[in-house]
Length: 164
Image (cartoon, rainbow, N blue to C red; front, side):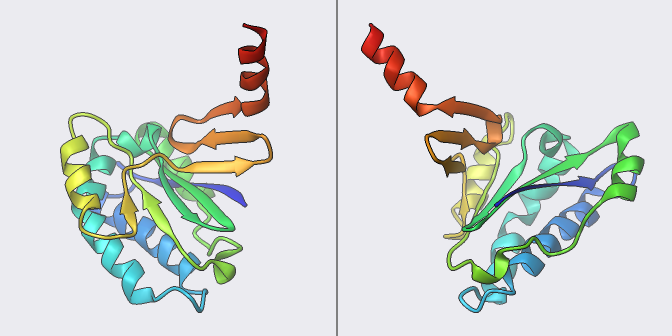
């Protein structure tokens, strides 16, 4: 199930507080599953914390969301900085995402914007649950690449190739 959550960042919250809220949202969503250990979620989010705070402080998560994939959960988490942060804080939904109880595996897909890409790659190497690979959501003949918000109709691409 495709979900999106926006978390208020600066000036409403410091980057470290914003990261803690994101980590808590991931934890409360996944800890409902009997197949997922809360300690593993905490360890992965702690490994990503230094670069997560940099992504937030630089405004990168405003435009390039972090993605949690834990079938059936597909959660895009972005931040809102600047003048929209106050409104985002009022509208935040920090409740566990439905579907987490039936998840068996999970991964956090981190964006790799420049100039932080090397730091993100290093952080991702610290946990098997962290990755820099784009999150791919299959839905019938369509594939949605989460970080880019692009919709690709695979059947249309195949028809186009046939026409050539």
